[in-house]
Length: 386
Ligand SMILES: Cc1ncc(COP(=O)(O)O)c(C=O)c1O
Image (cartoon, rainbow, N blue to C red; front, top):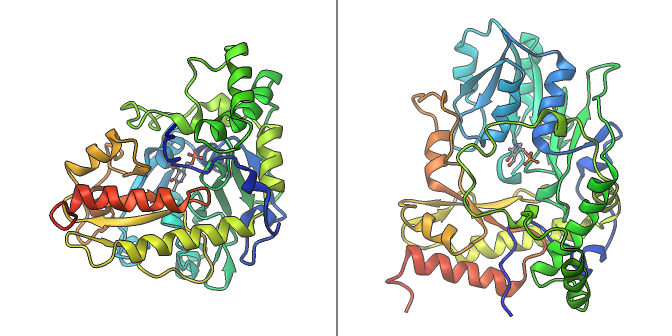
């Protein structure tokens, strides 16, 4: 039996192995962390807590996925796109020359889980009275400029599904907005139970949790519960055109289910960091020196656990469509917000075409990693593979 390579972490027996705490900082240990339903929900809640709404502007990067922008638009505020330099940092020279009237917040992301130095951005925000929303959706672990991830922003957000085998989940960290916390209500009993089943089912569907498969499949056949429902990890390779461009306001105010919260609090973290770093280095080695593609960054900073391996491909199409058709665990941020601007010297728009985000999470096996490298070489360098 062959199983699809999981794009995101999946539950396996190994999920509970190893040392609980990671050697590098983890946003989950931050005393002000609140669990939420998703990363996008956390952005929405952050905007609510800051009272950002109609007439306000929020600075956002040209390299983005729609889920980062939809909460801003849902609040009735305006997303103003800023350019990025070659390291994915905001181009502060551009930002400082902009008319900042009406700008209430700046959203900055640690793309791919590679920590961005944020001292300069923080200083600019303080000088201008602009709130900093630190988007740690790709970076649950790490530090930048000697400060732990999630400690730079007035508020910081994270996304649990990218680092843990859970079907939903996010975090919201409140560093400097006194006396305000997000308005959340409890998921109903059906959602609580579904989340637990979803976690186990997803592991089994990817050939993990050896020994449990027949039992779980039998149970699901009996219940017939999830027959037509797409599980989080089994979403179709190609999202619908509107996916991520809108946000479910009611769901965004739902607290995290018990099952996902339990995994977030109890899954040992050391293994997550170590395996992700190993997998990143595996790709960096295997994919360097190939004509037409190169790792965006071949060496990892010490204090980080990457979300994905960013691979620059000179001519990504039509290969990318073929990768998606094959169910290869990759994504590309090519569905841009319609109002995104073309700005001279910006790297963000180029990234949205050329950067493929390869899964490098802790639950990939060596065989799967090798299979991924072979497939990439077959698609992008067929003449070099015999
Ligand atoms: C940088 C960034 N921020 C926020 C989000 C939203 O996270 P979630 O998918 O948990 O809603 C994503 C999702 O891909 C993201 O990549």
